[in-house]
Image 1: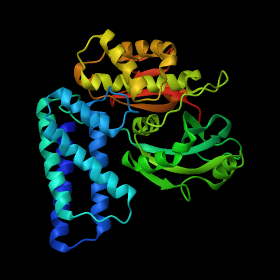
Image 2: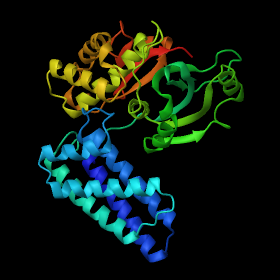
Image 3: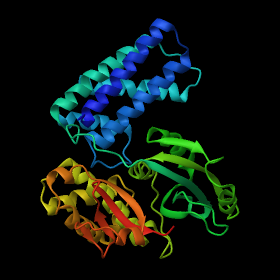
Image 4: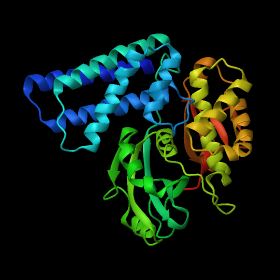
Length: 360
């Protein structure tokens, strides 16, 4: 089974294969810029999710690259990744710029050298086997609250439109309203993004738009964790009246806990429960959009989810996926023995963490 480090090497090899094809068959400037953008984004994700998964997700690409120097990567090789970053930024900010295909080939070949060394060092989870994903479709809609300089991004599970409220929202994250377009431009690096036409019932779209200050909804296909990780890069700390903060909703805290605890057990299934709890709290703050001022609210959920997962074998603990949302009826019908009914959480026969909290 491929590791996360090997997966990154494979992505680099595919970019080099495509470049060689362009050299043989011909290309235009847009082809090269698109390839450069793709490999630069993949490199940033690799550093953030696989090499330094506990580092704050709001830190920029530059700081993640610099962090490599504290893990036995030489300045010369660190500069290989900086070269990719600088070339990508230059191409992104100057649409009229021209970049040589041979220059890009050199950049990616150098990138492969440093990534190979990161893999050998085994930093973060690069030596961990790539686990199965729980990809699904989400509807995303957002509302501007200009008085607070905030955009509230809400995530929905698809459903039939009932002529009233419609889709069930599963989460919401407040970002700075000036970052909405940056978030939308960044999200395709985390999954597939599609316009709402033909994918979200028109009645549902019109209901959302009628609420005022509503931004155009869209469809995201990918992992829930990837969507939240992307949103957390643009997180805004805003004081809301009681009941309106993301952390006021126990279900949001539970879902975030599940993602963070799954990650820490994937990184080290044999660590003590105390260490798993501490690592999961760090991930909740740095990757999954929980503000530290609300840590006292999420810590009880972390302890409970760790208690459920820690009963499983190391092989299962390192391969868990989720969360999966099911109705109360579907949850109650499960005969899983790995569960905590007080928080409506269980592990099913497919090694998925299932939450019995879906309303529709």
